[in-house]
Length: 179
Image (cartoon, rainbow, N blue to C red):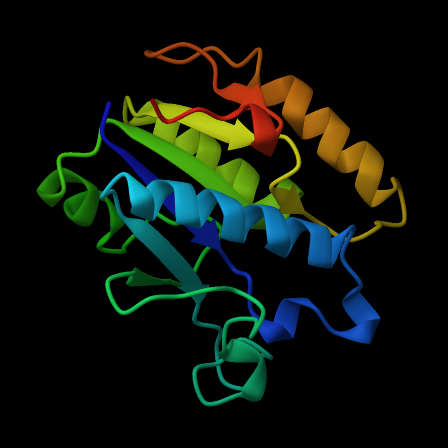
């Protein structure tokens, strides 16, 4: 099954001391491992960057817009820009996946409870087999719940989600086998 790795919002503006993310460096390390596996199979890695409005840390002219320097990128990797939590909404992502004849997406990145959740649901609604590394997405503590519990909750929801193609497959990164 032809697969694409989607890496969402792993941008400097999401990883400030004021918005500390759960296991940031571990998450980046696991995304880099997945990206290497995907590239080795000749399949695409797609980085999704949030383009925020003027004054937002994710505005394209702001330093926070840039991807984390720890992420390993190669010239063949693709980039999609978004302006909402859904990486498919008003972006070129779906056309890119169709052009590449992608049947399955692996969704990783930041933030589990916003952009990752929305994109996982959107991918499933578009009938893409969807794989989520249980340890390949992150978020921040919220006033109502710790980041670890948010991640645990979303992993459970996605693995039991009703969609035209069934729920997402949720596995630890080291259990993902691309054949």
